[in-house]
Length: 254
Image (cartoon, rainbow, N blue to C red; front, top):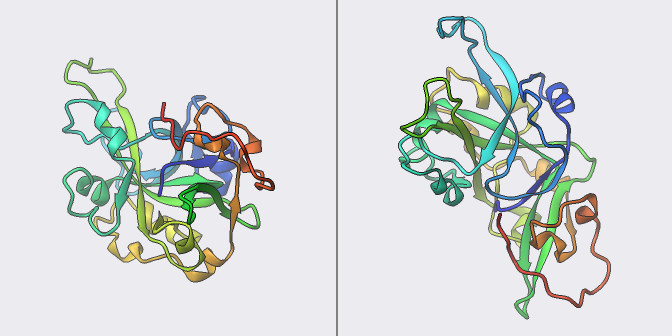
């Protein structure tokens, strides 16, 4: 984890869910049932608003929903293509790794998701995809890190590329039967502390999710159509009920 997930809620719904304002500026592309690296998806951040001169207001914090590209590109990267190799950050090393440590200390986000996909290998080597999702249909919040990047030749008024990585941790409980890693999911009571722009050390929030959060997840087998990013519709979330005959590629990235 995490190589694919689904996020289908519109910005207005997410803003209400996360007590935020819609800052997507009309760039949201609609429901995505097969999010793959390099795609743009909504993310939630909390920042000090800036005045006309660009100075932050230390006494105010605004939580907003923004669009970000999956695959973190460090500020010092020469080429944004490195982001395709930095879609995840391990909780065990994110605070020290050069690519993630500044974002860990200063730029944290939440990635809203309906659920994520993982592939379980059976005894014959066949890889069965599963969709991990709350049984009650509620939203998941993955802990994420974000960065801004711009090419050296960019004009001063050119907006930067905003990218993110999903934090992952060891799987446990029923999830360990599918894959050994999972996204770090944060319960609602931890959202504010994770997003706090004035907190430079959120290490206390890196503990594995509460067992109750894991217990309420449905591990739903789904069809191998999800293996190809060309497929993107609500049918990808349907429970797999019969044996398929045509093999699909394991992964096909954009």
